[in-house]
Figure 1 (cartoon, rainbow over the protein chains, first blue to last red):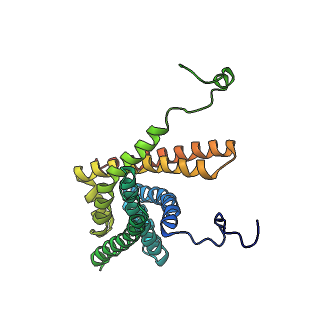
Figure 2: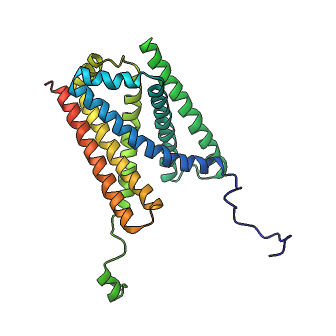
Figure 3: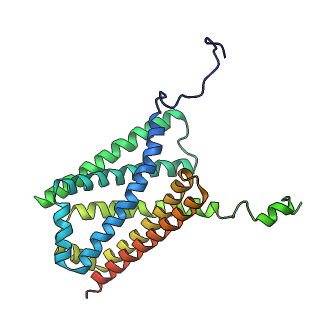
Length: 130
Length: 126
């Protein structure tokens, strides 16, 4: 190929800036895997509660620490992002919202709503704790 | 017009397992049922003090126990279907892939059972 060829090049993945929708796509998978692990941890918490108040207290203390809270906050945001983007996928499955403009807008909307849901959930939770 | 596959491919038994659509469809069905369940669970957990007594008292309500079991079952079924796709896409060695899928399916089943038993134990109060 000549240096000044006008032929389109396939994206060089190291320098190609992924569109927002593509970033959300891989994030959807990542959050899905995180949530599978998170669901297992929630089940463990539930089983400590079923066991005894003492066993539950040990895991509750861990979740009350700064790293426990960061973990729960990350899990909440992962949940709502996967939730919102999943609904986006369901719209695509019935054939709606496929044009590029809508795809970009719904990506931004999914991120925005998941942030709002995360803040709302934590606002309610901290009001309960405090 | 009945069968276009060669005798060799029939002997090898490879090709579509005729189960791809079921996988896709169940992924969507569990996603749909998880929409109300996740919203309910997220805001319920947030709106209660997560002390042992309040948590178990909440789980003891029959409606809550039923919804929690539904949530646990659909979550781990949804997770199992999703994890399988991720493994199929990123693990290229055939044996490692098969073992990973079996392990991940087993873990999802195991944790679903632990979750359901925990809910039943709390709600039936022993």
